[in-house]
Length: 209
Image 1: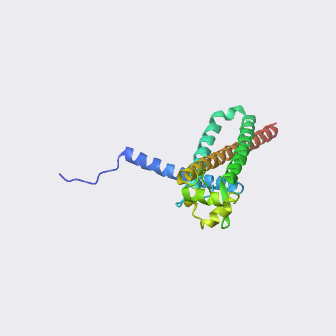
Image 2: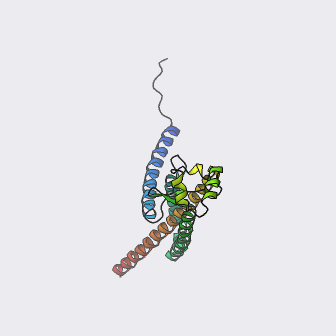
Image 3: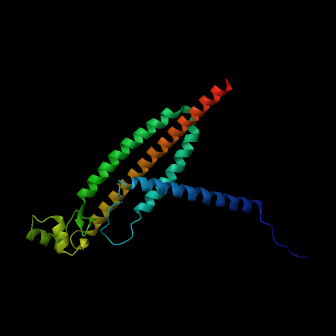
């Protein structure tokens, strides 16, 4: 009995089509997330880095923005009948919280970092033995001077656990601020779209008369 080529099952074809559709949709969402991050990134910069290693904060914020855009547009379809007033309130609430988050993030960044070599680096909350000795010798020295004395080796001055903890907190606040600005932007887009739809409906009724 000859064995021919197996035809792809309907399940396999369906799964392949679903994956291709998901890939296209995800690409569009990532592009939208990148656009939002570009807008937010013009005034909310990613946290500075002190410990070696590539930070994932920007990519994480981009992922969160893409997921929120999708969830927000799903929500708009479910509550669209409630009118545009809802989305203006969501936009205002998101903007208020986002601005508070941005100010808090900026305050923490300035409090937990120092300038060195033209950029800012995160410092820890507890000195190492070498750091305590240096601080004891010059109690009034600014953190910038302290870092210069150690040629920029932050972990020789502050314990790495404290540096990582502050980096994690700043990263969480940064991603949270990006998320709130994303909600605000999507809500504004939906509110404006509803205004445009209402205007077209009014024009259509006028022409029908």
